[in-house]
Length: 138
Ligand code: ZN
Image (cartoon, rainbow, N blue to C red; front, side, top):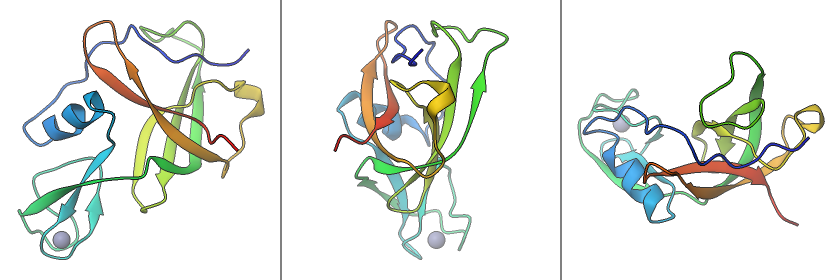
C-alpha cells in the first residue's frame, strides 16, 4: 500500500539556526546554508561550518531533486500523524547535501536505493509545512 503525504504531524523543535528552513518550506522552497568562508553547503542547519568553522553563511535555494540514499520503514510504534508505516528516507540532493524526510506515494516493498526523487511541500494541520519526497515524475 503506497505511503501517503502526512498532514497531522507536530512541528519539529526549532532553533534560531533552523527558522529559515521552515520559513522557506512554507513558501515552497527547499533552503540550505552555504558557508561564506569555503562555500560548502550544509544540512542540517547549524551555527558553524563543519569544514572551516566559519560562522558566516548565506541561504541558497536547492533544486529539490535528488536520489534515495537510504531508508527505513517504521512499523512500530505508530508515528503520530502517519496513517500507516512511516517511510523515513535519507535523500541525497543533487547539490550534494543529504536531508532526512519522508518518501510518499510509494509502496515500502517497492523502494529502490538510488531512485530519483523530488520534493513536495505538504501543509500540516498545525500550520507548518513539511518538505517530503516523491518519485521524480518522468
Ligand atoms: Zn566553511
